[in-house]
Image 1 (tube, rainbow, N blue to C red):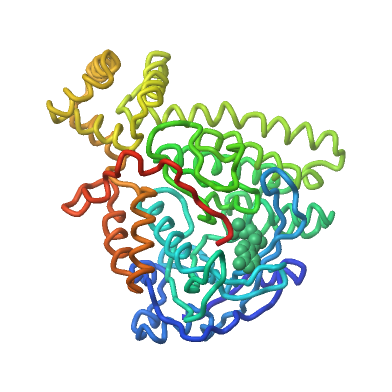
Image 2: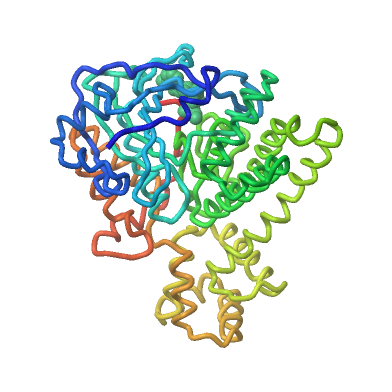
Length: 484
Ligand code: AMP
Ligand code: MG
């Protein structure tokens, strides 16, 4: 197994060549053997944990590794920052996986780079465990996401509000191209670099556009926007709140990336927000589609010089594309909600039914995941159905009537619903409990049990129940944090 690094061949303005900073006493805390198998890191699979810890803490380089820290910019909470970049991450290389896809292997928390500003380049164990679990949970939920290969503790303390154990997360991504990468070069009016980036993105993620000639830039925009739409629809399906949808955290691949202050919505409300710094609710659950569109407008701006020499014409062309976001989103969203309710058609009657349910969930302060799980189960359980009749009254009867009119086998409907409605999600309450247990015990047993259940989120096992329910006030006052 040998790493390559196609990004390192783009040119010096795209990154800094820099080695990870060695750590004191690396220990393997979490290891994703299944993912390692997918990545064909076969020789590594045989290695003892001590050796894996040396490699995935950054102390030892894999053959072919050319570590770099990537340059990017970004709009943070609406304000443009011309230089961000990997301030605590090293792309150690790329690998072709079992299915022939090129994947990035990145260490996060691996030391300072030219982009660190005043940051220490490190990652605390708690947030590293959280990112590891969230990435794997999202993957199991069938949502495009970066994956987690390993968490290695460093044996060194990092200082946040208090001293905390340090860790390095190994993240696997189909690439680390962000909207912010394009913004970095647009702000520097580097047209050549922008064209290089587009071709890199096309080659990596959208090879079908390679023959597109000058049209390929516009086609790239359409593809990226479609994947953002698909992604945010999926977030809304499971109640995921990214928490910091800045353009530097928006991947061109359409994967979920950078699980900083992310959280899961319990009680249904579009206004749900947990991030301590998001005081205006910019990144609230229900605001995510509007923000994704806003981010796509920023992406469109970076492409202007490639679309048309006449800037006015370019703005008109791309502006029209960005405007289609809302209607495209709404259609995909309603289709997704219809699948959560087992509805096979999407006429005005089904749309009204969807909106009426959401209205009821919000007014009655009902749990999003539990409600859809119970609706699914109610098709084969009279007692669950009775509870829902009590809670949702006439809505439930209307819904069942609709399903009956579809003239489909109820089992078929139920299995369609099950594919859209998880029985278990990584709830905030359990996530915090698991992290605390790991930090207190110094071992990863609590995370391993949680991950084991989250691996099959659409199927209840004997261990699922303990992660399904939370105390009624569990999310009250709950806060998540950035940059930890
Ligand atoms: P994030 O909030 O993780 O998306 O990071 C935003 C920016 O801050 C990126 O450029 C990060 O590399 C940088 N950053 C966050 N934490 C640190 C840290 N501890 N040391 C250096 N840079 C950091
Ligand atoms: Mg980030």
